[in-house]
Each structure stands twice: as C-alpha cells, then as structure tokens.
Length: 251
Length: 174
Image (cartoon, rainbow over all chains, first blue to last red; front, top):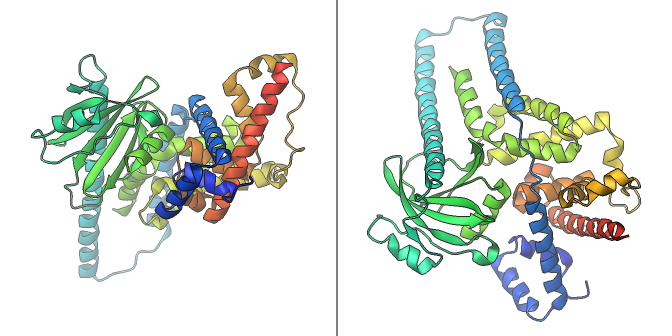
C-alpha cells in the first residue's frame, strides 16, 4: 500500500472497529484513494464468499447427547465423592441452617431468572416459526422505514428503532406485533438471501440482568442483547455470523 | 444444593454455544472426528471450571477453553502444524489429481481448502471474525493476544486467503 493509511486500518474500518474520530478521518481519505476503495471491495467480496459457502460447522446431535450425559455423570460423581470421601465435622447447627437458607434463596433467584430467560427465548423462537406460516409474517408490508415506523404508533408504549439495511444485504420487509411473556413486542422482518430474519424489540422491564448471548434451538439461531433501555433478539435460520453482522448494523 | 444449580446454569449459559465450539475446533483441527473428541473434553473442562466464570460473555469464555484444549491436543498429536508460520512454500497443496480437480471446481470445496491451508493462528482469527462474528476484543480474549495482533493477523490472513483463492482459480483455468 502506498497511501498514508496502513493496511490494518482498512481492515479495522471494514470491521467497524475504528473509533468515531479515526473512522471519520479514514472516510475523508477514502474519497480520494482508489487503492483503499479497491481493498475494501476485495475484503467485502471475500466475506460474502465465506458466508455464502456456509462453512459453519454445527455440533452433531450425538455430540450434544454425549456431552449432556458426561456432565450429568460428572455432577453425580462429584457429589458422591464429596459425601463419601470427606469426614463431616460438627458445625454449629444454627450457622449451617442460615447458610443453607441463604444458598437456597440465592439458588432459587438465579434459577428463576434463568428459567425465565430460557422461556422467553423459547417464546421468541415460537413467534419466529409462527411468522413463517403463510400470511403471518407482516402486519405492515413495506421496505420503507418511514412507513413501518409510524405504523407502530399507538400500538406500543415504546418506539422501536426501525432502519432498512438493504445496502448491507439485509433489506427491511415489514413489521408486526407479537406478544412475548405477556407483553407487546415489536417484530421487524428482514430478509437475507431469501431467508427470513425476525428482530424482536421490547423495553427492558426486569430487575435482573438481561440474558445476553446466542444459541440455537429447534434448528434456529438466536442472538440476544440489551442496548440502552431496550432488549433485542434476532431469530433466523441464517448463520450466527449473519446475525452478528445485522446486530452490528442495528447498534 | 449448589451442584444441580450449577448444572442448570451451565446448561443455560454455556451449552447454547456448543455450535460455536464445534465450529472453532473443526477449523483448528481440520478434522471433524478429532474436533468432536476435543470439544467433548473442552466442555467437561468448562463444566469443572465453571465456578471460575464470573458472568460476562459466556461464548468467549467457552471458546477460550476450546481453543486451549485444541492447542494442547495439537501439541501432543500434530506438533508440526504449530511450527508453521506465514510461509509461501509450506502450505502448497499437493498437486491435484483428476478426481480432486473435479471437486475443486466447487467453490465451497476450494474455499475450504484455502482456509485449511492457512497457519493455525491465522486461521483461528479469520474463523472467529468471519464465521463466528466475534469483535476484535472478543478475539483478543479468546486467543490471548493483544488487539493490535488481532488486527495485523486478520489483515494478513485475508490477503493470504485471497491470494490462495486466486491461485487455485488460475490453476483451474488451464
């Protein structure tokens, strides 16, 4: 590269990893630098090629099964070793009681918040599957964010962020309402190479930390995160990498 | 009381990232059967170390363990693979016979071979970024390298992959 910017900067810009100032500097430079433009196109083509080829390996059901069994065995093994191998000393009964009660309450709280998260994820996947049935995908069918956004007015007690990402390969298809965990959520529909992606948005209501992360369930990939006072979840049969890419665009 | 709680927490926080774990291991070891064995072992390790996980990004935490387990396995079983750095000569594919030529025309196959021909440390950064969608910060955490190294490795890995792909396309044209 002959230009003033190093090659790594071009890659970091492409990955959205430059801070705002450096990013603006680079964009200013990009206007006049054919070399950097060509480099960006090259990296973009490579990414499309990698994602198009669906190179992501999935864990086989057999492996999943083996791991579950192994963990169950390990858990039992550890417990029995604990009871048989150690001498139990006399502990003041009161202290033990308090400790047991405290750990029980703490355990229950953790358990409840996680089982609630898992239930919500399951409801989101169900909502996604439902949306794929004929006629259920959108209540407002438009690729125009200025049509979709006002449609939610008065139907929700919050304003979901609505943007079209056509130029990045995620065109907006429309919007819909769903009910998750007893509350209205905004569902935005995007498409990706003929696959459907649902973006669910709802205000953060809980007191406990949100469950962020990704995973798959019934063959669908999901990605959940919180940003500001909103919670987001993407569900689709496209790769997790695609979901991460869309998440970057939404943020 | 603590043990079953731990197991539920593990199944809800860590197990959902099993596909990412399988993907990273498959590309690091370049072989599905070996990858499955290593992932199983890494999962058991993760479960045993689970009390050291203090919240945060469960996927990055798990992938770090998977990566370390892969490298330990490679050191033991295929140490030569870890000694190769970026070097034009070392990774030349064996000359193609007619049978592989036919499959090579398949884009996916070609890409797979090109990716597999990268040195392990370049391959992992590329796989984490392009297939798993990890941020530079996450990659730095998983691979235990500075962010600057993530940037430079990624740039070199992409260039290298591009060149390998162009080379194999040219080969096919003859």
